[in-house]
Length: 285
Figure (cartoon, rainbow, N blue to C red):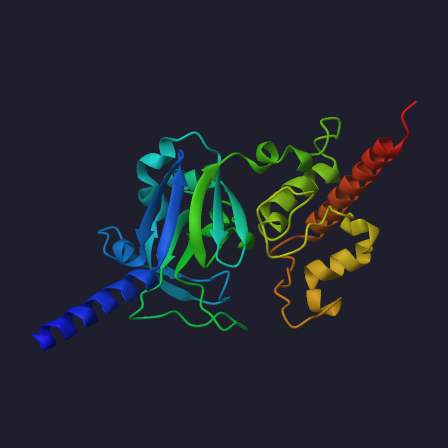
């Protein structure tokens, strides 16, 4: 009898421990949250072995077991959303246009959710003590749709459907009077695609890895354009600290023209904020 009781205690503890450590990805679309575990994803019939020739996180060829994102979302794709926010455990929050994901059905890049198998763990990321797991959004033929490195979020904890960033956070949008071809408008697009995965601008965004670049002071008020350009190209050439996380962005990741556009956008946001603050500080007549 004691042996049976002991086995029951061990089984209960073991089951509780497994439940506590089971890796979960939360999918929230149409107001409904669905939780899927790594073991459930690995058991799906559409899980396949995928080879990524040039992985954005590992910077080399990688092989994964992965589930097609379109199949995973299924009927959720019928919902009213135009952006998928992919959140990571470290505060990274990539804003991925729904249209970019849907291009796979017309010969574009194909999005997959790679799932780390505990029996075959992935290697540690370059210079880090952890892997890209347990969930990682990877792309097959990313060049077909212009997928950038910022749109390969790893260590995922959730995917959710929402509005385009400019609709969700209107404070980050340039004024309608800004010409379509103006560098400020181009910089707004690049900022939303690349920068706001880590940074916010005047509170706009969900990224938590880096500082807000618009408040309480705009970044152009305390870092020169040369300094901002240096931080983008090689952060450690400008400033370093033990917990520094920002990686260098080469010209393949963001062109010189796009860097200039981002700087123009940040400067525009700074001038607009200064004008607004000056107006608010004027005494009432």
